[in-house]
Amino acid sequence: MHAKKSNISVGDKMIYVISDLHGMPLDELKALLKKADFSDEDWLYILGDVIDRQNDGGVEVLQWLTGQPNAELILGNHEAMLLSCDFLFEQITDDSIANLTAERLQVFNTYLRNGGDVTVKTLQNLNRQSPEAVQDILDYLRDCPLYETVSTDAGDFLLVHSGLGNFRADKRLREYTADELLWTRPTFDERYFDDIVTVFGHTPTAYYGEEHSGKIVKTETWIDIDIGVSDGNAPVLLRLDDLKELNLP
Picture 1 (cartoon, rainbow, N blue to C red):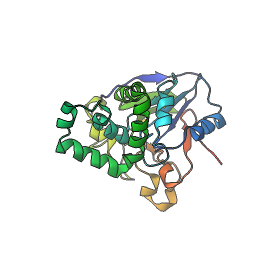
Picture 2: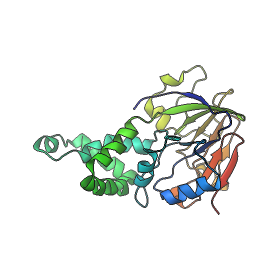
Picture 3: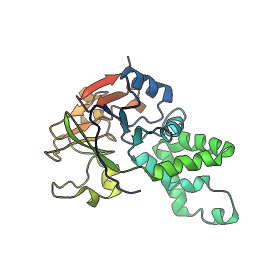
Picture 4: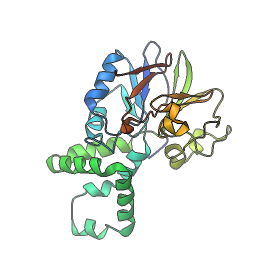
């Protein structure tokens, strides 16, 4: 994992963000993009946690992402947990069995407790059919950035999975650890940068009060777009060019 940064301004292209799909079927994502008139000229950022918790665990969406030139996944904590369990897809040998340490088993159990069982099952089935396809997915995840910055007519935006842990206004983005970008839960009154809006997921908006359940939460310095898909809420696509929200009926 690494903190790659690219400052992207796309002119007439539209930039969309969505987060925490957690196993949402690819057909539903495509239907949402169709409703937004998403074209080959537009850009989609998924702010982490495509995988786990329901259906096929998001594997079909991951496979789709590996072939999309105008869609990018920002690494989420669930993808990071999957990568920490990549040993599950190694060829079984005496050496690999010997390396199945108590530490690795603990990491795997932690991942399962966080909803990784459906993803592991789907990937193991895929691995029996095509080990190359699974390695392509893992390689794709290893190259996912921890954050991106983009500019639109509505302003400048920092895209990250969970917010900014141990935030300081004078702290450079490259100084943040992976955990600070993957596992943070900002309080409602926390302020981030004044000159760039931080957009993140990870924390279901119901965390800030039941009145926010299923809705995007916006403050002066940050926007939380995790509306709780795995809790049954309809996903919301946010267009950064005008902050318009789109969802399926």
